[in-house]
Amino acid sequence: SQQGEEDPQALSIQEGENATMNCSYKTSINNLQWYRQNSGRGLVHLILIRSNEREKHSGRLRVTLDTSKKSSSLLITASRAADTASYFCATDAKGAQKLVFGQGTRLTINP
Amino acid sequence: KAGVTQTPRYLIKTRGQQVTLSCSPISGHRSVSWYQQTPGQGLQFLFEYFSETQRNKGNFPGRFSGRQFSNSRSEMNVSTLELGDSALYLCASSFLGRDDTDTQYFGPGTRLTVL
Image (cartoon, rainbow over the protein chains, first blue to last red):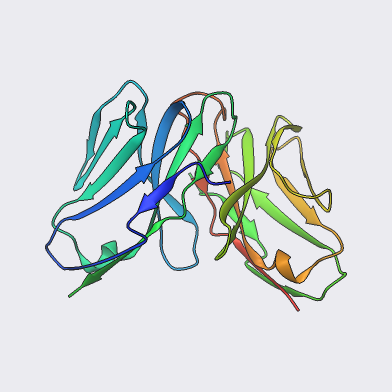
């Protein structure tokens, strides 16, 4: 079963706009990670946020984590056509010894 | 450093056959994990190997097996293939696998089609 549930399942925006994706999970975690996957290819690690962190930035990416609500969000600012991809959150749950992925958000950036 | 490599990239098999997929981790990485990705089930964890030992296993039937060699390269095997085994199989490596800041680096995947 999936630990992470992502919302929305699909998102289509205009180039230059900001994109926000949300992830909810069920159990206590060590960390939460976000990955990007271009159509049918391998996953690219974007950012990792530890359970004791609330916000993290990397370039145009901003990730927040609310452990009380068991949720995280990924914000991509000033989107570009190259950001078109599927985005997955993955939780490293305490005691689980594996990453558990959500179903992903399919992001389309329209030129 | 070279990234995670997987071979072959594409594979077509028929039901009942068996298949072996290979993964070479990033140099120095000792943990290798395997995932199956399908449109219906998403990304699901198969197993993780660390220093030639299976450290964790997902909820897959015994037809799915793996191993890791002393150079950290890993193989996974699927016997008696079923149509539902058609998927993208992803391998990921990490340095230790259990540090709470350890990042997994994914290979490009092997696309398996079972006819």
